[in-house]
Image (cartoon, rainbow, N blue to C red):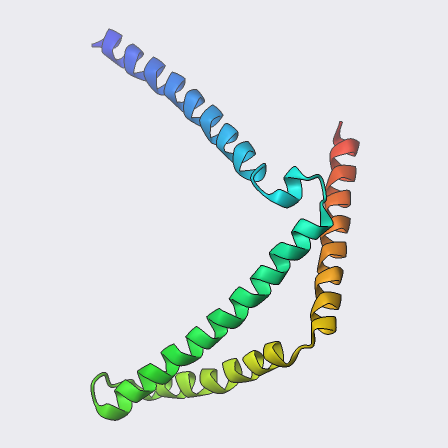
Length: 138
């Protein structure tokens, strides 16, 4: 019995260490997948990623508006009744999401590029601070 317990504890210790090493390798490989990190601060790749994220945000906002409108239409038709709180929240969200989508759509290319340039600069500063902190730790 003692031998079985010893073997079980030994196995658990070995597999835990192996799993931790595997997770660590996994984290390192995932962090290396980002084009921004891999390129060592390639600003153009970061800007492209931010442009794509901006477009995805607009698409998501339009999708959320349609989803809320659909739920309110189902409520009005009697298919899926909402309680007063949900109805009020969905109505409010349609207005708020619509404002945000209009703001995103009305942004000129120059404004969007300024915003992206600012975000890229902020990311560079953040990366520089991380590097400085790492250097101080050594």
